[in-house]
Length: 392
Ligand SMILES: *Cc1c(COP(=O)(O)O)cnc(C)c1O
Image 1: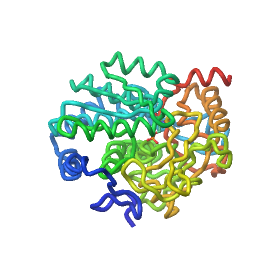
Image 2: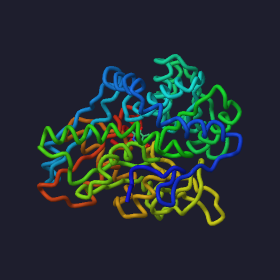
Image 3: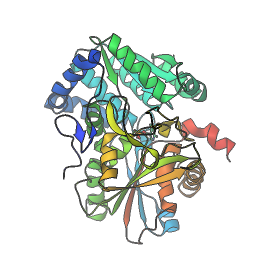
């Protein structure tokens, strides 16, 4: 069984594919035909790897968290994606896609963003590489995430409010797709997670796979073996998790754990735990698990972290869930908050609220004393200070 790569039509088992309006066929087909050849070329890799090293600051450290390990009586390593330029893993993908867009001859970049981390990463890549950048963002998110809106503007991006629906992330995706339909020649849509029509889930997973590639090299150096016993990551759309799991999914000795946002609880009506609440459906161009009513209306998700506040999940993860290759936990808002404060006090690291959901698995599952447990710390907590202060 191959978990890592989709088939030629973009399917991971029964999930994936490309469900798009006819107007998008030329763009999506162009990408499907050319993405692998371009991103695997020597020339592309030379430029991309150089930027990851000298601009983003990779490799990010794999940090043995001594105090956290002592508390939970196991061996915990944190993959420090929070130390990337712009503060999260999103830049790995944004830079890769903007480089790809340039090679496709595009001059204009559009993106959607929820908390603003993907918008900031894309605006950063566009400033660096000299492309026009438009970021769609729900009107409500624009109000909740003022510092990231300011950063995008300073970087030269135009931030366009999405005013339909619940005025949050999924509405921003709809606006971005509409823009792309209207500007197929000039524009590339930089999708921010392992969602969307084929080839986006695979494209984004490949750009994020640097995370598990480095973990293998770093573990080999630190403990003499490449494989940990467990890898753990939070899942919104699933890009940091896909990157963390990528080089381990075919390794039988590595157990995989995903943490979803339970919100106020899976039965509360205010949740974003898609594998617990979702059913088979099509959202934003691919077939996957979706939180929806019986007649296919998308249910509004809720999470304390804007980055996990999404009613779907990437097809890669839906497949891991269905095949029971990964174990899924639902982490509630208060459980994530507790772990954010705990990591800050024990290790002096303020994590993003999203990443705190991955940390909270430590309270849900008992690990053995000798288990090597790698947790992806997907981002830093600067953007979440207002929420943290309210709960101090
Ligand atoms: C956006 C974001 C996430 C969620 O997105 P994924 O695609 O699921 O990784 C998680 N952590 C941080 C810090 C983010 O900015």
